[in-house]
Picture: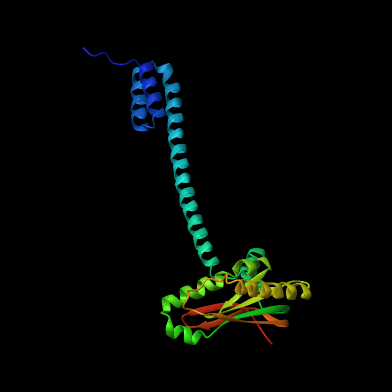
Length: 241
């Protein structure tokens, strides 16, 4: 004949079940222990049972918060991924302005007069080249060609303001006008040196020549907004002579 567990053994089983997360079994054991115990132990068993219930509630709350935190982290990762991807299409100037003025970026991006230097790069003979090379091929050539200049552009604090298909519009800014002029000129000279050394990659059958133009002065710098029924499109550039 099987011997029934004592109320102390039932309490021990309840504790083990609670520690293992089996709160249903723990509740059953507490109930059986209360029935088997002497009346003076009933209050203690009820207290232990209540503590077990509180532990279950707390565990559920922590589990819910952990799930919420995990969902939040997933959203943060997603936003970081979106931000990283969008940063490839946005100029460094815009990124810096938004990061420095997170509460009101639109006001910070508003147009204002500013002394700047603009450096234009333009591929000569692009029309002829586009007739001789496939669209995919010419895109590859232009990307590789201009990529040879990127390090020098950033090293001299230049910003790619507008990619123009076969050309680039670079903007140089500084609180000291002579400084941004020097930076732009040094960039142009660095690009000339790269071209003279043949360090700008291109297929052997393609002969690319580059025109460079520099201008310093006051320009209207900031965002331009094109509004339509379907939405809006913003650009950040410099306008003027």
